[in-house]
Image 1 (tube, helix red, strand yellow):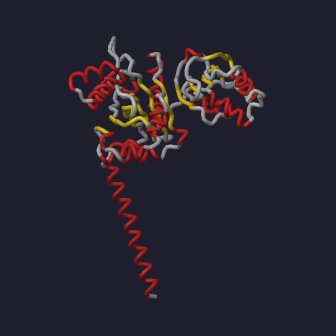
Image 2 (cartoon, rainbow, N blue to C red; image 1 turned 90 degrees about the horizontal axis):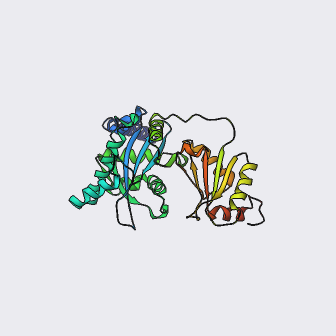
Image 3 (cartoon, rainbow, N blue to C red; image 1 turned 90 degrees about the vertical axis):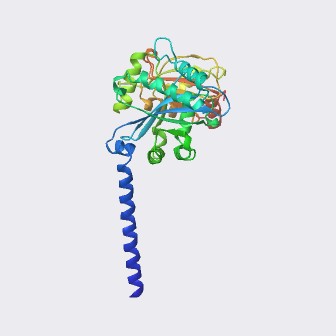
Length: 324
């Protein structure tokens, strides 16, 4: 009987402790603008400035859009050469502030402020005030900026909490909620992207991200263009055959200069699912997938073939080619 009474008391104590914990979390969430936005199913926007661990110079700048409705996060690379008024680029604003004050952190924030003023002209972003984050670009992501941001986003707890200076304008509580929310995003819902080149596409691109709407689908197979950057004879031809055998419509093939080690698959319409489907068709698990919207391409997906796909075909025999 005494043992039963003790167990009952322990159970009640644990229940009260759990209720108190739930109440504390609820109270903390009520004090966090980011948690409130998540409850309201509103996207969060943030600038992410990533310094290179090996190269001196301006950081790479990204606009991140976290959508709690999916949940997903898309990090859009804003090249330093991007003109934000008639003649001044993002790099100009960084260099100008750095020449005056000599503080890299301040210059990076000035660059982000210039990007924010420019993006506020986009109707979907006019009322948004993104917070500013700063970090070190992971070495393992290679030299392609969108992949650096993707690697950083996939380690949110370490990157947001371990070094307090990585987040400016965020309370410790909001930093904690942001880290926890990002850590819960499925791997396939973290999408690296490039800023579209055309201004009219920029407006539609960010409007889609903030609204959460998907681009209209067209009927028929996924259309693909293929370029061989690996320097391996007939690699694009072999990839064309395998994609067509698996349902894709390959409309062109050719050669590309530079690179060659890693295959990159670009979504050209804002539907990342198309690029992921092409990756599965190629049976090339090391291929990187990202969005680079460009309606002038007139295709759904662009594939830049690297030597990794040739190696994967050789190891698995998935392309049934005698050359691999």
